[in-house]
Length: 529
Image 1 (cartoon, rainbow, N blue to C red):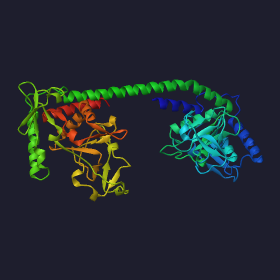
Image 2 (cartoon, rainbow, N blue to C red):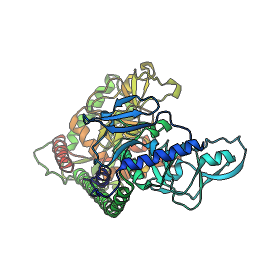
Image 3 (cartoon, one colour):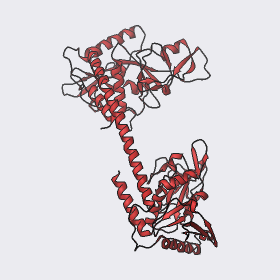
Image 4 (cartoon, helix red, strand yellow):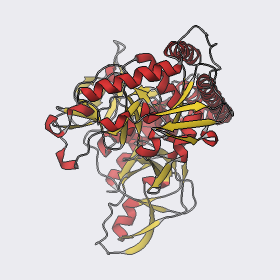
């Protein structure tokens, strides 16, 4: 059980009457509701409030079902499906609007300058159980508007928009004005408003308010008015709050400790994954087998595949200008391009096992971006070609999203449609997301990426080579390289240049060793889940 679940469990017990024992000397909640009814009748006679045309009482029938009787019409209906849980016999169910008067504040209107300037709060000032009041704005309010839009000490304020249902009690000794996306709830008679705050907190936590399933999706005045509330006597409300607030600090401490533990576990797992990848690309994860073929033989196979693609017209001839990286008799590293040799010892990050070789990324793959388009060229029918963006890419996971955009097929070149073994990575992203990579596990007809995502397409179609390159490009060694070649693009984004990325030096083992490395990585990653 995590901290949030623990807090919700405490509150669930509280509002079901299971947190503290019932006291037989307490008056039943029905007497509290009767006093509220009498007070409302008095306010109606004094013309301070209007009569609620839909006022109702909720009771349990002889058949053990719950019924709601509407006082104006006498209509009675069964509401068993609305009752979320059982409550003690001395408690009552009622609508929130029976206990509290409620209204929203003033809508923003920059042209209306009637009245005087007053500070006011919006939903951005209202948090769970607290207010942020360091930067309040001002708006004009007339005397009539002040009466409706002013919160006083003890009022329960609830967000209509934003984080729907978020609530806090205004406990300051001075009044404050509210904007129209805040509901102000004021009890008709003195009671323990904090109990009802915790009801709102729980309802939000379990998805009854603002959730995606059944329950209350929005929080209009009508929806707020009709929320079903379990109601104990005032004395029991106070005992419940006393117990909640004795226990809750322990739950909060537990939640904080749980979060710290989760962060530590995540951090440890991330560090272990990075260590595994780093060990793998340095040839330290699995033993070498002398009888296996060498990386040079694999690179020669890739060169032959490139020559074949050039002959078929699928690849331009300049892609054949490979370099060969070797270690000289002087123990230094050299790169041969054509007939010239250049020392590159300073570029070599670490020594490789026998049978491994260094090569440039551009020698084993092509790198290109996806479709570029104007906003008005997208289609809303979710037909045509799906365009994946940086947000679809998580480390080692490609996510299809509901808000993916689509282009008609004539807007997308066939050669950028995603194919099995393609590797995708954002070309423009935030610093922390540089190097997030994903492999395309099978051909994806009618799917490509946008212009800010790289497709890395290997010349040799082989799943083990593709998976090894995926893990290699995801390693700390390669992520550090990618970060070193970025250019800042705007305030928060970084641009990885394709040409500089293509020059990355890669440590390459034989294909057979790649197979064993990939199998070991996947085994270890599975154990870390």
